[in-house]
Length: 290
Image (cartoon, rainbow, N blue to C red):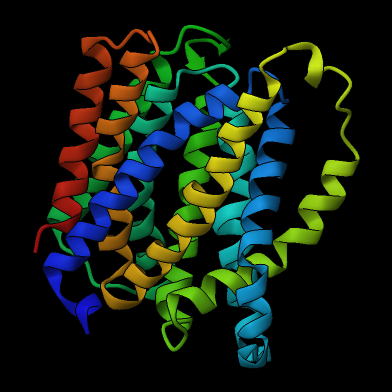
C-alpha cells in the first residue's frame, strides 16, 4: 500500500505542515469577530458535521473496547486543544503559537516512555531537555500577560501539545486496527453534540459589529473543514502506518509556515524567537534520530 511507503509519508507530513501552519493565521482572523470559545466551538462543530456521514457509515465498527481510545482521540486530541490554542492566541502571536507547537514530539516521546514503556536512548533524553529549554525561552520571551517574566497564555499551547502527545500514543497503541477515516469520523462523532450545546451557551450579540464578520466566519469554516476534519484524517492515517513520534514530527515544519504567515500579517519575529525554535528543533531531531 502507498501509505506504507516512506516517501509518501513525508509528502503527507509536508501537506499537514502547510495546513496546520496556516491554521494559526486563520484562528487570528476568526478572533476578529468571534470570541476564542466561539471560534473553537464552531471549528469543532463544522469538522464534526463534515465527518458525520462517514461516522454513520462506520458506526457498525464501533466496539466497546475502542470507546475509551476514541474519546481520548476526539476530546484530548482535538476538542480541548482547539480551545487552548484559540485562548492562547488572544494574547500571543500566531507565529509564536506555531513555534511552541513544535513541543508535540517531545511530549509524544515522554508519554510513550511513561505510559507505553517505549525504549529510549540518552540522545532522546537530551532531546527532551533541549525541547523544554527552547519552549521555556519562548514562553519567558512574551511581552503581554506576565506573572513575573512568564507569558502565561503560552502555557495553554504547552498543555495542548501534551494532550496531542497523549492522543497520538493512544491511537498508535490501541486503534491501528481501524483506518484513518474510521478513527477520525468516530472520534468526532462524540464531539459534535458537545460543541453544539456549548455554542448555544455563548452570545453572538457583538459578532455582527464588524461588517467583515462573514469573512471571519469563512476563515473558521476553513479551519474546521480543512484544518481539522481533513487534516486529522491524514494525521490518523499517518499514525497508523508510521509511528506516533514520526507523525508528530509534522510540528518540525509547521513553524516555517506559521512564521511566513506571521510575517505576511505584520507580526514581529526576532532572533530570540528563531534561536529558541532552533533549540526546540534540535531537541526534536535528537528524539527522532535512529
